[in-house]
Length: 389
Image (cartoon, rainbow, N blue to C red):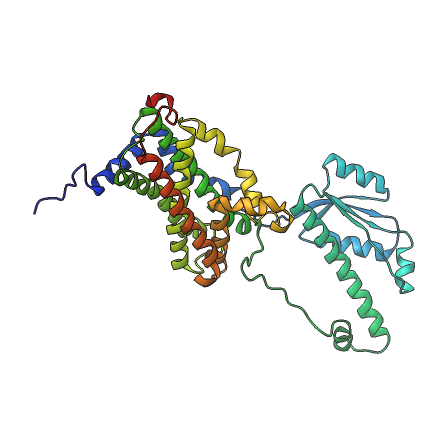
């Protein structure tokens, strides 16, 4: 039986020709195929430790008593913090924070022992470097756990002195126990939290730059105006590297890095089926508008950080200006991140992600229709790139 050889005018032939065009373009190959793979290994590397531990801190001890030294020993035993400086001068601890030698400090006040023995309220101030939220969180938690453990011990001894047994005193102090369970991020790691969302943004930005670069090249070469069938083949060809990169992230990187994954695999596939065409449509419109090969990199690169903040995972959406709360939906990554976190990490049913998925599908239809309208209208001198004259 003879091998099937599609004609150059058939849809399959045009699609294969478009794929070959992408593969012959070294810049496009680097952005569409190389960049997602590079980011897949490079970006998670920074967050391999997942949880910040042994943060350097200072302890200001203004009460030279056995109880104050007991608190200090509990601080030294904490896995979250590591006291590098023990001093009686708060100004010295503050200067150490300003120099970056420690990331926070706690103050054990004067007359600490007397206040504890008299059952007076004692406040142990804790100060953290707010410029580093993750580090500051560990400083606050570490000191809070150490002081809380000390406080629990004092209260148990007081109850036992009143005649209660050890079991009775434990029940009296905490009649209702609370158990904290992290449902969708069991390790409570920063990498599991941020990479799962940023992966969608990486897929979008690399595909936007690569797709706009290719379309800008077609505009420069004067081959942008062509038939609907040809443009459908071109856009479908641009979807291929996006789908492959999505499968690479969802199906391997998340598994390899042990990030929460696979909650709803069929839903994740449907997400890729909607997200990638929406991004391709936006990339084609961007490349058509810029009409030059290199400009896409300049325009797209600086948008990554703002889009991350508007994605709803690093900054509360409610804290954004109202205009940005609406404008952020013009980026496919906004709906893509919302759907991915629900389907991939939380294992939510498809109905829970229906709204962002429908928005992505609508965006894909609108952008593809706009590209086809631009590509098939008669080229005029006022609306074509200089090289298309």
